[in-house]
Length: 312
Image: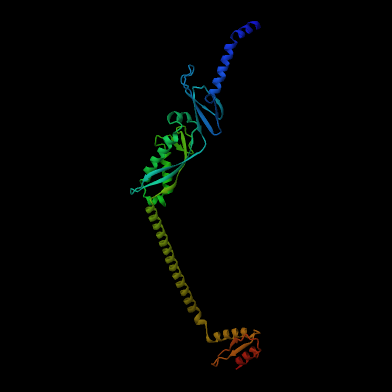
């Protein structure tokens, strides 16, 4: 048997060697079409150009992360399944007919379950052929219902939400669904749509900014007027309180009571060690007025003078 195999090898050795060399050459030349690498966060669709007789309906299959070997005649389409971001500039027309541009930033993720369908219906250029036109169409339709000033000031967030809900509502045949959805009916899950910049004409932008500035001044003036009105009410209430207090206390205040309070105040002043000048009132019941000289000179005891005045 060994002699027979050896004889066969010797007879066909040149043809066998040539065949092996040809296969090695083809493997080196077609290496990039046979061996493929799927990076992390990616997935590939392998499309079989030759129908297999035992699987007539088998045209495509998914290839996960890692190394994937295919036949040289098969097609290998690599897709990024991670969160993607893109910014596109769209020309729009406002409600009053003004032309300007809006920068839209949107984020999305390709649905793993519908990757073969996406590859068959749209292809790898789905961003240019599906996402950008679809978002632009909804954006133009929505912006046409708003004035330019509202878009620049208060309506931006409202427009963003309206655009997102319209695109992901399922009413449009775009196969774009909301981010939280796990339905297999969608090929792309859209996370959000953001209006990052609104490029209005310079004259219109300056006019809007002036109007906003004037509105802020009017608001400040209204605040000042309200503050002064409240201050006037406060003073009025305070005056009424003082008047009521005086009307309540005045009947109980007599001349004797006032004289006694004056004596107490004078005694408190007299107890001070500083030098003072005593001025005697010009009436019979006049109280002394004590003035501090602040020169450090000694004067007669103010308390004794006060006592003598009181005794008189």
